Every structure is written in structure tokens, then in C-alpha cells.
Image (cartoon, rainbow, N blue to C red; front, side, top):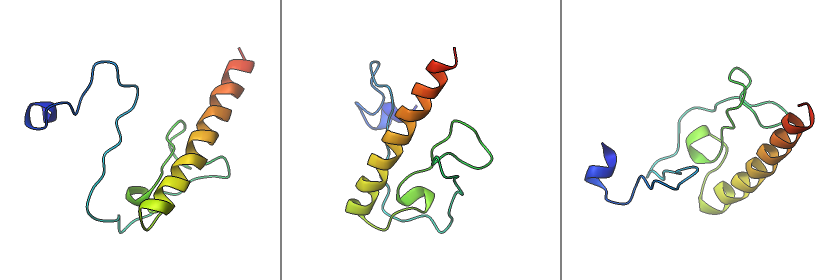
Length: 81
């Protein structure tokens, strides 16, 4: 539905869509040492919206950390099969 308002938002070949807002979250979604949510396995809270950054650069750095953590998590899952 959002794609009807903002053409190109939802691409058929997109793996992940990141949304930027104008405000930071007044909350912090807790995450463990592997950067996953403490109460929702497979969820990797990141950036300003999750309470882990305060600007573009810190959000970008947090995104890099999360991408690495996700890759490690996927690798561990693949090894256990």
C-alpha cells in the first residue's frame, strides 16, 4: 500500500528495505552480545530507530556491525544443518 504513495518503495527484487525517519526513537530495543533482540530471535535492532545511533554516521557504523552479526548468525545456522 505504501508503494502506491511512494513509487519504487517496494521493489520486487529487494531483500531488505530500510526506512529513514526524521526523528530518533525515544526507546532502546535491547540486544544481546550477538546484536540480536533479547526477546525476539532473528531480529537485529539497529540505528536510530532502535536507539543505537544519534546521526547518519553512527547509524551507518551500527548498520555495518549488524550486517556482520547477521552474516555470522547465518553462517552458524548453515553450519548446524
